[in-house]
Length: 373
Length: 124
Image 1: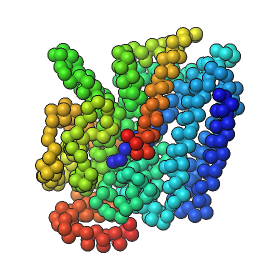
Image 2: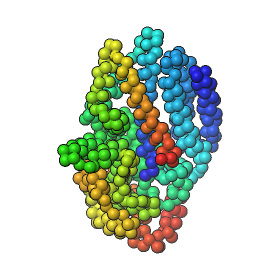
Image 3: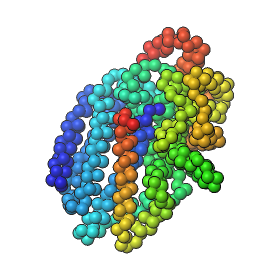
Image 4: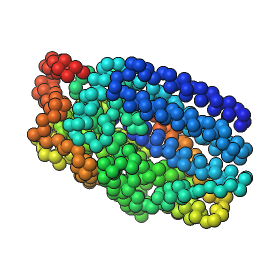
């Protein structure tokens, strides 16, 4: 089997080398060159690691074959990742991607983003998303040409703040998230103890909720709240808009396994609390009214498990710590006096849409021409 | 807003620590066969960190949660299991059981790594 694995390693080395040739070095705009350099360095590292598996004597002993296989599979995943998510963006990079990258850079400057602004590509097959290791933000082909969902870019910008390691500029944000996780875990531990004392029937659900908070919900809510705190009301409206177009049951809670994203209604509750914390009380009321109308129309009803999964005081504490986190890394907190071009464009877009949804498209078209997005 | 930001986080974190533990097992096995020395400082620090229930690093909290689910299914206590591994690694000659325990955790990370990758590619 070692011979077979070694043959596979040589095949993979060839694939990695070929992959390097798919980066269109002569055609890349300047803002994509850093991504090309990072990807090339990663591929070089993969070659070194593959060669180590092939040559290092410790990988050739029989008892280590299962671990050698694990190491190879890990490398294959990594190479697939670079091919599918990174090189494909470089390979198909066009002028519009450059424009989008400049727009994201402008947002980063406006909000005093503490990390390098990401490269942006219109190659997402799902929705707005970010590949944290390569700092590549992808958006669907059309999404970048319309303003109403653009606030979701602010959510994506928070993910690297959470995942970047050993960077003093973002440590404080991560610590606040860590403290919040401890708070949430303690709450559910207490609830589980109480259920055990009273022979309760909800222990399994509470365990699933607790896991979901640590593994996904707290991160997603901190990203939502970062969006609220740096962009203000437009972020809350964009959440409503996404739910109106693509949402399911706003009160959904996981039954059998931990879930990655909190229920839409929980997200909105946290977002509304966040808006109030930074002084947008009137706007908060307006969004709240629209949210209620949406929930009524969607037919969603609040089940007992929703309150168990998303206790009000936990959501409120999340909003408070996320604000402290955003302030701690010195990001620009949204307020009525801000003059940032993108900040004003996105908040004005939402005001226009809410005031007259039927007349909005003409206005947006003019804005698109102005910003060339 | 999509699954990708979160899952790319999980993917890279699990991949890093999968590497750490898997490399340790390779070193330990090789040392057993050849008598060559190796360092277990990094892996020891990892388990010491993880057995501290009050740790505030969200990435380590995430890993601890994955391990917690695994131990809970086996009706074992996470804190005790992780502390036992750390204590065992500090001995001059640790017993074989600790290698099997770490191997089981490698499988946990392999699963999470594969799952987060599949989710990024659109599978559930």
